[in-house]
Image (tube, rainbow, N blue to C red):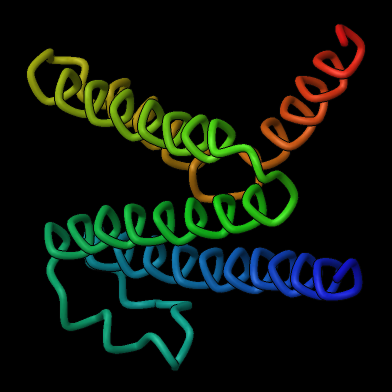
Length: 159
């Protein structure tokens, strides 16, 4: 059983890495196309595989960016939940993982909405984007796994 857990953990870590690289590739090209579209630039460095992005307007690219941001954040949330579930049998840890992501999503939404209401749009957007960036990678997992381990260790010392 331990061998299965190790192989599964390795597979999930590889998925984290692969999706991280895919995410980077997509967003670098999406940002490049958004820049080309916004500034009406002739020179584009968008990968040939994502050249179809040139058919979209700047507002469409901006909307696509947020849709993909949410999709990748949900994907990474799923991977994080799978890894937590693999290592810890306590359901509270799964709930805490979901709460952590929920808080990140909620705070990002609040800052984004406030940024639209208050004239300082850019600041709200940047904070929102930063929070979603945390959700789109291994940071949450890197904080939660040791925290959960410490919690169990502390609990065992109290017995």
